[in-house]
Amino acid sequence: MTSPDEKDHANGNGYVIVPRLPATDPQKVFHYTDLQRSKPTRANDPYEYLCGFGNRHQSEVIPGTLPAGQNNPQENRFGLYTEGITHSAFAAPRHSNYSTYMYRVRPAAAHNGYTPYPSPNIENCFLSLNPKVALLPQQAEWTPFPIPPSSSPTDFIDGLHTLAGSGDPNIREGIALYVYMINTSMTPHRKAYCNTDGDFLLCAQQGNLHIQTEFGHLFLQPGEIFVVQRGVRFSMDLADGVTEARGYVTEVWGSMWELPDLGPIGGHGLANPRDFSFPVAAVDEELQVEWKIVNKMNGTYHQIAQDHTPYDLVAWHGNVVPYKYDLTKFSSQNSTSIDHTDPSINTVLTAKSRDPNTPLADFLWFGPRWDVASNTFRLPYFHRNSASEFLASLYGNGLGRSDDFKPGGGSFEGGHTPHGGFDEGYVNEMRIQEMGPRRILEEQMTIMIESSRTFLWTEYARGGCGTLHSQGTDPKVWDKLPDKFSTYPGIKDLLARVKADKEEAKKRIDYYHDPAIGRFNQ
Image (cartoon, rainbow, N blue to C red; front, side, top):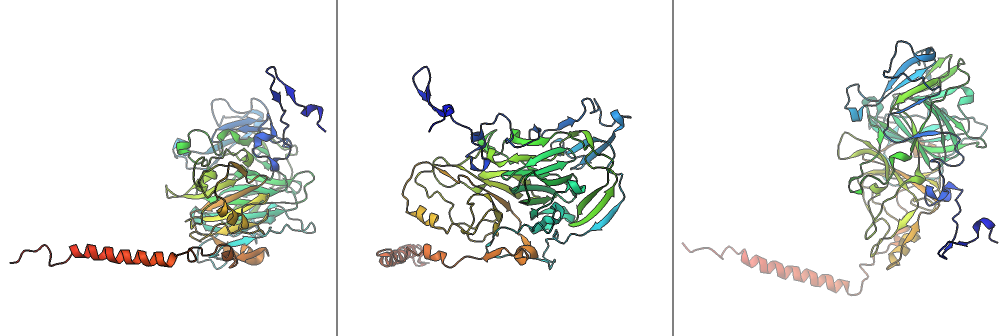
């Protein structure tokens, strides 16, 4: 039965117009625009945001709190303290200069000192001399990483587990991969987290989260990412009705996340700057209460205690500000004629390395899009890429190596490790001669962290998690990819003829190189 709102009606020209109803489930949309939102956030996001990647934003709780014409007046309004945070050298070029001025109730310097805090799940030294990390030379796959039971309360600090990495934060160069599995909020226990080693890129896979930062609040849902710069404090809380959450974190040392250059694409496409959301200033209602801040410093935890909340910024301005991005807004680019495009066309954010031609890390999106190439085997060809690749499914079927690849797990191929598709769909694709346009990867979202570095893996990833279920390639896959060349009719006779032709061709060429030819008799 068609509802009154869905009934067709004719316009003045007699054409029938079928109303398009908004989609309601972000995990089932082809693109964010299917939600038909007039706001840049999903319907259940309770916060307001500032928009625009790379801007120097400003925000204030009380209008007129930000100083006009200067950063550090002799006396701030309401008795606030001026505090600055930098991400770059003071003398860095303007386009690479990152800093934010904060106007807060109490300065961050007012604390009771640092004390050690247990960090058994964190590993940040990914050098070959560290016996606690090792290579995974073959392909690997993990079923969903286990979330602790409710009987074991676990917040983000204790639920963050290092999987792999390369380099060391102490030398300001490298990358680390993590998973987080939590069932407890931080704010009710007045706990905050601060990573002084590098920038975190956090991607939610299960469970909505309220994230409180020094600069304001963000709401994170599966299919969204959150970036927080080193040195910025934040707390992660489970949203109403959520009892557990899981996701992935990529950390870069000595670099920062930025938008990739578009080259011939032009000024728009991939992740557009306007779609990145930044918090607006917010201040806690209870200001003078006990708080603990756990700092990750050179891969180990230390905590500081203080008698005031870290979330007391009444105003701020700058470009060192956490942000989030909805992956369903990604403006995908693809081939519209022939051949499969390289995965770099799906880069959301990139982090540079010291090699100007090779990034330290790329964060890639694989979501719903059209597939229209002609005269082409449309799936990725078998390949041995130079990059290390870690894939994770956020929801839906995902793009893993086997049917066991589920949301919440992971898949890995190291640099120059041979890999490609082995499932039945891949084999069927080889039988199809031509097809029309089709929509692929509907109702699913997969991410990939790609790095030019060789990953070394923690004991947790190599077995402690209990979900590493396969390494290498299942020999049975070769039954699906037989040697058709050797059984091709007449192939042996054809190869024999090719060999004979080459021998005859060699004889003809060798004749001209005979030393007896072309010399005068003396």
